[in-house]
Image 1 (cartoon, one colour):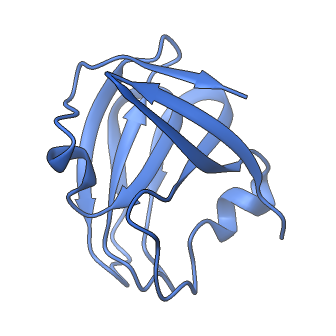
Image 2 (cartoon, rainbow, N blue to C red):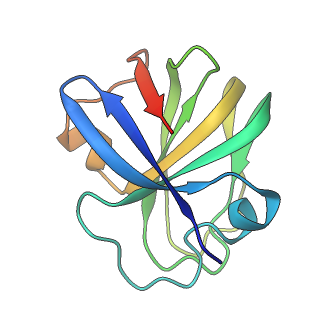
Length: 120
């Protein structure tokens, strides 16, 4: 599957991401990858506002997920462990989910309530 590209801006950071904007790409996500570069990640676009949910089946890399509302505000940042099949859900309806390496958001001072800008 070929993921598109999208850029997310938050605080002073500009982060190019892989873009999962179809059901098939969202379903694949970061499965089966053995590594993810330090500044790499993926943005999942749901097309309609809904409760976001992720799981880590067949995912080898521990990840953080930030759920993002339609207005760009981060509602949650949650840690997910490799191969965990429990569902990680957003606390409110969101339009996007943004996955990065575990600890990336904390290391970069990005918090719940911060606003992100998405540039396709």
